[in-house]
Length: 306
Image (cartoon, rainbow, N blue to C red; front, top):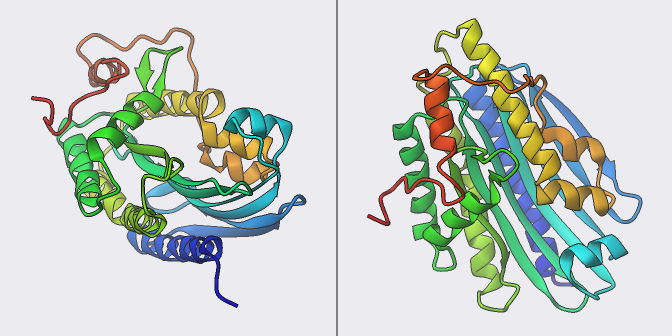
């Protein structure tokens, strides 16, 4: 019996998880790993790999899931569909570093299909620095554009704009970080080939550890002051707010009966909130906020709109 496309995607995403865990372990050199394989009562399951207490990474993880089941009323409303069954598979990761000079990074690629024949891919990579270094933001976006340029199905300007819109917190008037690329419903309208879309997702996810390593290389051993440590806690607090208030993946996981511990793996080990905190004018913290408050359109890091 030939392998279905869904099975091919599941197998490929499992391989991404294995390869990227190995690459991050090599990058960090001291990671403690906790593995939790789980079954979903409604159908399917997953493999959660918690990565923590390393030299570079304080807490993070790399999750694989492959779930299926009936489309609940809440999911029907979220997806605007009358289909009766769904299948979803994906691999996702968030890394929270020890050093506040090293950014938080998030990656996700996913495939979703319904029993009415509808399917699509989604995902992306985005960067959340505690302190924005503009040269690093430009280099990060150049890495992502290089991946997109290798695939006809990928559109860096459109995906970059999608990330700017998605990772903006209206209640704060701030971007979560310096963006990246974000795409959803790729293929839902039948405009792209499934194999080409899968190849793009695998290329993107396969670059994850290397992209992060380049961001961390110059800063993992940088000296840290108490003020910088506190600022890291405050920016982590903003990260938590976004994931709990706005993030679609969090909402989908919860309404579809996903594993709560795996869904909330994205939260840091420690975070901080302070009432109406205002950084000192002219400080590095204030400079970072000024960049993050440029609006929903974000920053044209590569000068494509010049």
